[in-house]
Length: 445
Image 1 (tube, one colour):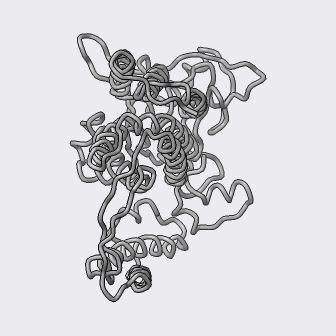
Image 2 (cartoon, rainbow, N blue to C red; image 1 turned 45 degrees about the vertical axis):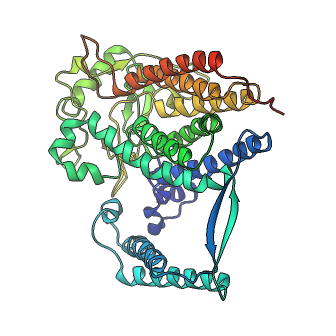
Image 3 (cartoon, helix red, strand yellow; image 1 turned 135 degrees about the horizontal axis):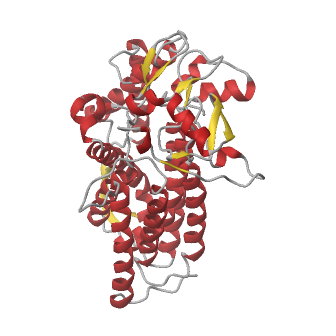
């Protein structure tokens, strides 16, 4: 696993560059997901605009004005926060043993770095406005196409997606939230995909309606975008080992920390007993005799430890079916040999790498949506197909994934299973409704 770029360069090239510890791999993949999403969404919106399915809106703007104090203040504030944290973290990374993740979410930082970046952004904004300055500001009417608003859409998706993901995660883990509300709200971990999807979707639909963008054509354009964004995001989960893994695969055990071998049922049970405190109390005893709390996934007895047995074909690597996520970003598990510092743990027993399965599945589903997007004639139907695909994919993976369950009339579904089932039902109803009530759109070219 690669919690941050430091581990990437150390593993690939043997370089130990402490400054790279501030670049977490999950965050990098999330950034890539947003960039790819913006590109594909722009491409799809332009295609629909050429077909006359989406139209521009005229807006009046004032040009030639100098930079306002508010614009300079906002640029300076953003620059200060960026420099205060990023440069501060960069400088702090030179000290071995510092917890950069904790540093990022603390009040510490570089005042000098913040002031330098703030001054630079204020100057750039001032010069930009000076170049556009006119002797007398003018009001102009411009045409703004839907694809011109992709930047705003991405920002809305980012902000409200994070808010929704945090809210749903804390609702799903209410006991953990109640124990320490502030820490759980600002913690960098703990994000629920469906919470982010729901909040971001509502925010974007409100924005689109306000700007006169055709809702059905917008969500159709977003369908393949959402699928590939999720696939890339799961690449971040797999790379970092952020806890989105499956239940234990009892067809394998870890003979030494971080290494997986096939095993019998008896050997799996022996390993359960060997690491009983991990499963029953969430603790492990390190080689130096220290007892460390490493996980909050605790069972009342070893018999209730979730697991299934599946041994993959010999011609495929074992890590595709059983993985211990060494160097995981959660620091969950037992210590790895010859490893010092942070992120030196691996799960005591291998689990199903469900994030890997979702990467493969969602890329396949993305290409499927991309292939049929021009063949779907009724607006809204493509998005409904996405809802069904997404719901089925997530519902299936939940059968082998670790998650919090609810008790409803004797049934114990997870939050994701409830939402995914609702998405499938909504998608089916949507296809029937749109097909029955909407006239076919213009033929795609």
